[in-house]
Amino acid sequence: MKILNINNLEKRYGNFLAVDNISLSVEKGEVFGLLGPNGAGKSTTINIIIGLLKSNGGEIQIFEKEQKEYGKEIKKKIGIVPQNLAIYRELSAEENIKFFGSIYGIKGKALKEAVEYALEFTGLLEHRKNKAKNFSGGMMRRLNIACGIVHKPELVIMDEPTVGIDPQSRNHILESVKKLNQDGCTVIYTSHYMEEVENLCNRIAIMDKGKIIAEGTQEELITMVSDTQNLEVEISDIKNIDKEEILNIKGVKSLIIKDEVLNINSLREVSNLNLIIDYLTSKEVKIRNIGYTDINLETVFLNLTGRNLRD
Ligand code: ADP
Ligand code: MG
Image (cartoon, rainbow, N blue to C red; front, top):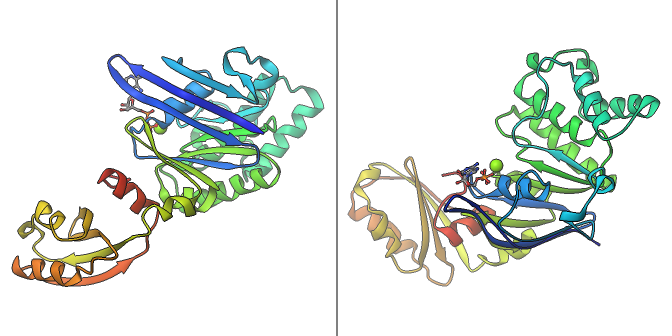
């Protein structure tokens, strides 16, 4: 069953095309990743799906119903964990969760149980009485999740749920996404962290500048660049080298320069290691370290856009 289906979706802010004719679908039981750098259009897409923003064109079906027609009973099946925290700072963890539970129409004993479930699920039982404003960034993110899953939705949409938090809270959140999915929940997960999407998602759409530039399982995406290899070179005197000149070396497909490290992606069939070393030597830079690195989703993104996911 297709839980979500999007066709030719478009969104403009004034003249600016933030979502450029995208189509995608999510099957029941998936953890679907929407991966892309800041500004790609992920949140805009998510906000249209959940009805917060109006599109300028395209169709959306959720739970096999037209989005425009969906009523309360479908809204209850969806949980939303927004990028901008949707919690009340003056309320305690428990009060926040209770509030969101009641919005979804849960009452009485069922509400009490739902609050316990959400507190436990996000590891906040001990902090239930504390006000949200006293929470660390990671705990606020966990509370944000608790408020989004209190009604046990069938589909949870999480928009960058781990931005700017400590590793421990991050691990907790990643584990809880897995657990939600094991319990039968479909998850749509947006992130600009490649590692998270690789770790969690069975299918991934890569988004950039409003477009879906690639989509598939992790293996399918990596196959797209499996004819290439990444060479990482740490050098001195980075100012001596010229990006264009490296891109002109035989076989080189793309290049990222960060601090004093070059990441050069080249076609495997062209063995250009000598050419690269000769070039660097001719520019009088010292090679401090050199080696091949793994092909991953970052490589896919680099190959398709010429840029780094986290520029
Ligand atoms: P992401 O979530 O992938 O970081 P967003 O969907 O938030 O991307 O933003 C996509 C693009 O649309 C960005 O260039 C952003 O600056 C722009 N944008 C987002 N919201 C608005 C708005 N309300 N008005 C004008 N431009 C916006
Ligand atoms: Mg966003």
